Length: 245
Image (cartoon, rainbow, N blue to C red; front, side, top):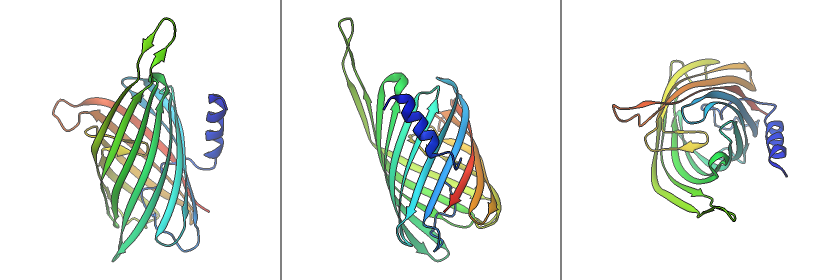
């Protein structure tokens, strides 16, 4: 299938929801095993300029403890295409939940002819007011060579074997409240894991009915934000729906 066909298919798959995979309420409710998340996003990157995109994720609760999910993303103008699969185990601890995630992610940066496979293992602790994530990622970069009668660029590869994953979010209301606002910082997003480029942002959600939530995020990602020389690298806005079937 040609690239335009793949892009059209991705858009059709995510038409019925528009949000980043919901950061709260991951637990199986005992009735709705299927969850669809989707979002639209837009922003500005200092390297690629303005961009827009879409993404969608489908989650299936196999039991009260186990779930699996698969997702896709397209960022136009960046020429970024992503797919991922993830398995999750939930361990209830009192009134909180501890999740163990194993994830395989593939990014294609078509503009630079680079493939980026990622494997991530992490733990995610979810309470009423605070959520924490800690884990490790293996990130590889593969630059595909160009060969014709005029050019001969060889392939190049680079692997970061231990990329620490960390993040924290804080809500102003209990997580089960019909509406909420919160702050977060983290060195990952739905489709990337990095060392020091940390996202700082604001998030919200609002229930439309028992099965549907509207939510979104506004975030700023500086370059080298651990240092005092950090400069703005990317700003983005996401908005969409979390829908349980």
